[in-house]
Image (tube, rainbow, N blue to C red):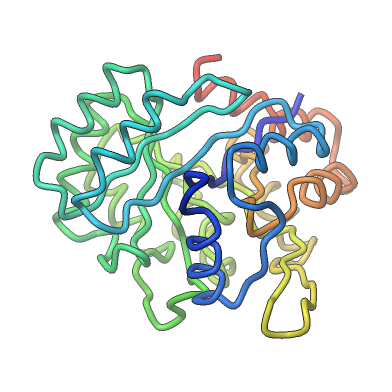
Length: 276
């Protein structure tokens, strides 16, 4: 079994525009068309059983409509939808209550796209309420290609959040921080945070370099973090459509780590977190 803990989709009508816009900002190509059918086709090709879909709310007004889609769509075609929230969402308690009541397991925040430091009070109040509800919070961690000058969710800042919010189940994407990996262990090892492996094993395809492919993270660095944190705190993820699910799965499966650790990362940890 494989569970991809980090994927994205867009409504069919807006997917082409969304991919063009976001791909242009980050100078990245994409591996699917960004639709549900594109994701499920990718899953079949990569032999992935379930994918967690993580919406990003870039405008607080859109939180309700985005969460409506998650509530209506989760559980279909092997897709497990999370919700989304913006730090400026005024009725954040109502939205989180609605997600929890509908059986949604968690929600995504993206400090870079939402242009707010993760340890800002607006996030802290949301995360405190999420902890009370038992919701999982997935956050973008580290640098964002679209906004390389915004340093809003590095490992030190994530540590500051976890120091202030008790009982929070948090997943720090991209192994705890894109291009901040040398600081992940020193800041997050003793916090209990989970790390997802999305968009680090690659390969990533850059659209402004003649579709050149490259891996973000060195294999030895990834294995070192697995050893330090323990396989029980790592979740497999791809970040499709920006990274190929098939390439990510094959790269991970071929890593020189034990089959027991691979099983933990590929599906056992996700099943436990999601209550499957």
